[in-house]
Length: 109
Image 1 (cartoon, rainbow, N blue to C red):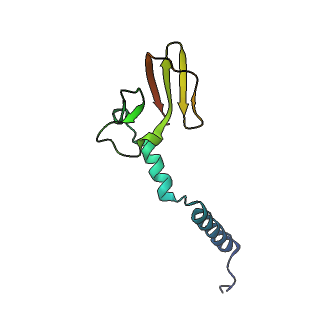
Image 2 (cartoon, rainbow, N blue to C red):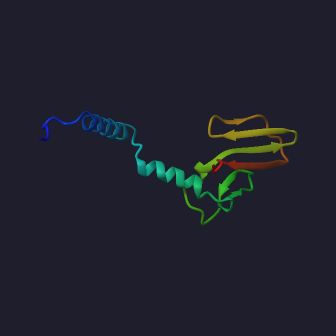
Image 3 (tube, rainbow, N blue to C red):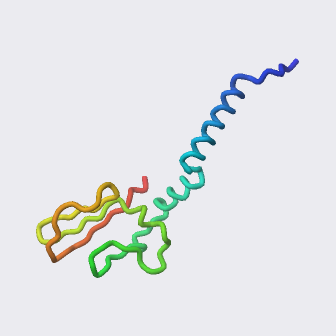
């Protein structure tokens, strides 16, 4: 005979699902959004990037809009000083002409 009382596993599963749904609503982070971000990393292509006349890393014409988020860091060298740009704090160091630019994207595991 079946009991009308839900099992502990069913109650726990429902509570977990409700908590996950509430967190997703609060943060606007959904499974679909996470997959979109992972796809930007997985499908980033070095041919999407170029260097402007001002020595800034840019997206080339025809590149999709999101790949700049796949850039891990940008380093610019002027004379003897590297200027580092990253997603965690902007530029550091000096830039005094003769600029060379180097960028990297996040590793693809």
